[in-house]
Image (cartoon, rainbow, N blue to C red; front, side, top):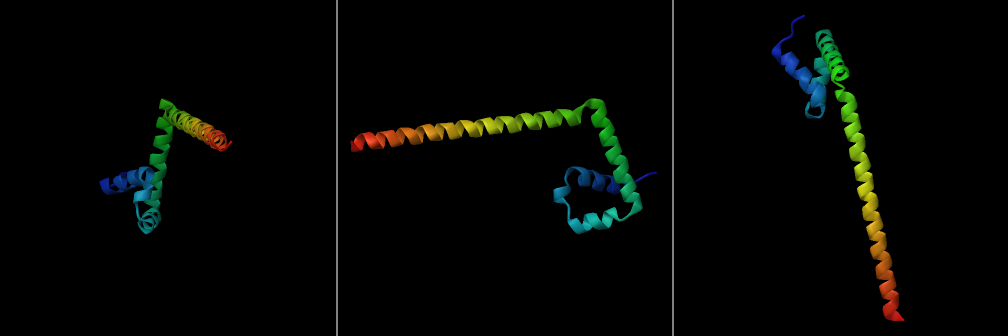
Length: 97
């Protein structure tokens, strides 16, 4: 089945930039069986491409690594803050005594 360029472009935006689209516009557009079929075809092509290229797995691995780095950085800052607080507490007590 052939789709118009506008239908294809809207479907691409729906798959990749959903948050930029108006909810009512999406609801109306997706009511059409032709548009639902287009979305299913495009999603199938995307999944096949990800399987063939391993892109989906790679993105997940990259995201997981970024999350680990972020947690490590947060832990480092917490440790630095604790050390500074302890040092200030010790210095404060030393000046009193």
